[in-house]
Length: 256
Image 1 (cartoon, rainbow, N blue to C red):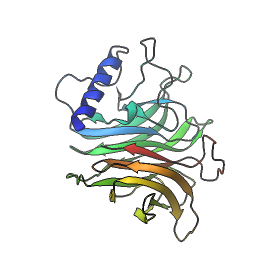
Image 2: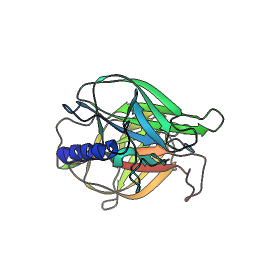
Image 3: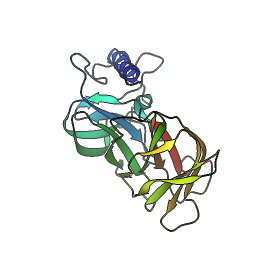
């Protein structure tokens, strides 16, 4: 699986490099030893391309053979959810507007060290300000087990909702009806530990401490044994519509 994903990232980089002299990464030489993926969970944020220092890490190719001006839009995960390779070091990570208007304007900046052999996820989060043209952001380490038990799935919770209190993720088996907490309560800009679950389908919910009602729900999410997943909360916790783009939502993205 890791080999297939690495090849997919490399092939994507080749395609994009043919479109833009600044596109994605220089893939000549050894593959970098750390990994990072990028999420645009900033409510109302425009589509962005992600950068590590001055290196463009993500972009989208269009049908015309030139880089799309859409970028990674709200609710999206860059590069199809795959990790991008990155060398260890101290980085200024940014999300820059992909559209023609305000092209390459940085709307979020996160400074963080990237360690050798580790994996990370960067999130744009909170609410986009049209006045300052900015949104919040944070980074979490994706510390899944080095040795995977292929008889179970691993799941963790990341909270990217700025107006939500700390929440605990719960997973209820659609087969047995058994409900378990997936780690402890997670505050905004936090990520919980990966927790093992039997492979299967689950109804997911988040709850505040001491609450008996759910803050967010999502039904029938499948976790396959031997895989690793992140459930990320995004949106505006005050929205009650079940169809609004900015409603609170639980995103499911595979880490491996």
